Image 1 (cartoon, each protein chain N blue to C red):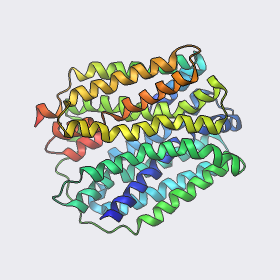
Image 2: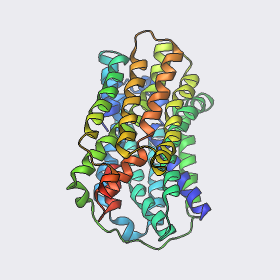
Image 3: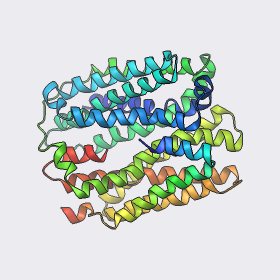
Length: 44
Length: 330
């Protein structure tokens, strides 16, 4: 929902490298989030 | 039963097509409407904002109206949205068209899951659900490949959208050949899912999976076009690699979990790390084309791998309302 325009803004302001950094940042946040997530095996 | 699953998967391909139809044509659409890159990206936002709001409002409609009718209505509405985009005279109308496409997709998404539940009854429907889920990135990949040559053959981007409208409309007509199924009552509501912290964390993983697949898929064609000066058709074809790999990685992630070789959270971590490595390759200044394509492949694998882990975790997080949890994660 916000990823495509955020990447578009990054491209027009800084270049494509910034758009890919945005994608990597979301993945990094998700990676950290796994530490706080209870996996399926822990729930069943 | 096979016909029903095939038609449902075709509907997912049609909806997935609408998610990325404009992406490979951004240079052409932007030139006509005088858009910058932010404006082009907001076309996706229009679709997914209306999708989310419609899902929240209409989550119980499938039980009242029947899932088959809802999926058919969703396809019809998406076809109308595509027609509006093809005929749009301004950027504002194009945004409205994406809103309509999002409404159509949202009407059908939850209903399709209820349709499969009714079709399979007590039997396991995981494989059918996987086929249906794989239809979305497959359709988006198809849009990246098909829209540039369609635009070249049909006199511009509007011609490509008219062809797409015919495809989505045909999927809507074919859908009525699908058998009706008994209505299955949901064991919970969307409110149960909103109160579940682990569901929010599963949503974060889904944002890094499906969300980044759509965002990256929107820009990969333009990236290849501008950074490597490739023709638009070739850029779309190579860019579709990202989404094709996402389609293939989804069942791979499911197989890793089903075979109990890798635990759920590790699959999520692997997916996130593979994306980070992939975007690092894409972001390196003056990287050769082969390295950039390798990065796109890794991003595709990374966004697809955690799909089963996310949905199974969301369902297990809220055993009283697995449908609602999965819906929230979507």
